[in-house]
Image (tube, rainbow, N blue to C red):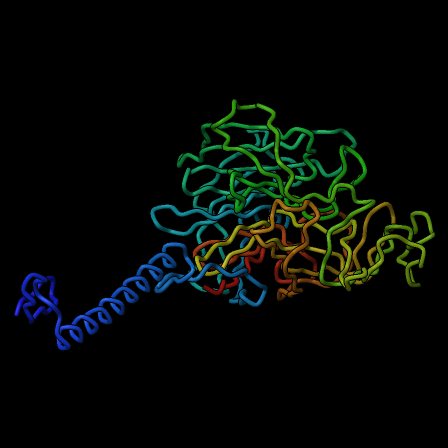
Length: 437
């Protein structure tokens, strides 16, 4: 009996050499079957490994982030912020940063003072003394409407601003600076956005969720003399802007349009709630001294609901300084908070008026940003805040609106200042919402 390569040869045939016997043939067939099965198993392993590499089969791999919805925000309570006496009513802006691991907030007081504060020990507490302050009047960065953001990773403050009532065109401008511990600023830089007026970019800056875009700025909403100085945007705005250090300070740069509703006569932003819009021909009386009592004229423009059952944004709606790019790892979305006219929205005594103010979450899908300047939010929802007066109000101001928002350490913080007949008449409410992980 002889063996070669594992096969049995057990009969000698003389000149023909060794031959297979029946037992030898059976042995060959058995081994052939085993090798065939082994080959199939090896091929199966190879295919599975290839699919894992290609991402078709992903054992143990984390799920892709899902899109945030308003249901992911849970109200926790509020703090009272009164850093400027009775003038706390007129505070603007909100940003957050970490100093030696501690969460702190930045808020603009009347007359250009930037205050830093920490949260009270518990919800319901009040803060009335800032940790430190900076006088930003000399920077040239501030105006009637201001938006701020602090970039922790590069230790710099960003500011956008606009004049509310003007017919003079001014290009959108963005300032950055370092805040020194002694109340001074350093590394002051600016850039202007080509062919984009300032009144479309007073909401602030955020990290960009768009590939190939360093930062985004804008947010949009009403300003006085809406048709002047390049037109305001009666809808959301967003523009890609470059790293400031990559251009000379004071340079004018091109900014890609991501969202824009400046052509408000043919396009406007949408909202969840349905206003009674008298602004666009709904009230035939010229500059009346009393609110309208009948329904808007049927021939008026931009009446809600639209064909999709949604409301159109109107002249007194704004996102102010509320844009937030939120990425928890499991959930993400670009969130804006709309302060809007509720009920009757009308012109009276040379000013815009709201019967009441309403607030809405608007969440944009980051995967679709940049695909269409008229992109609408993926989800919207109305929400309420305690101690916010429902009384009529006039003008375009952050008072009694949600003037700013920031996302920090798993929570959203909204700030709303002033308002008659409320606990925040001479203070601001800082409202906290937990974000689902």
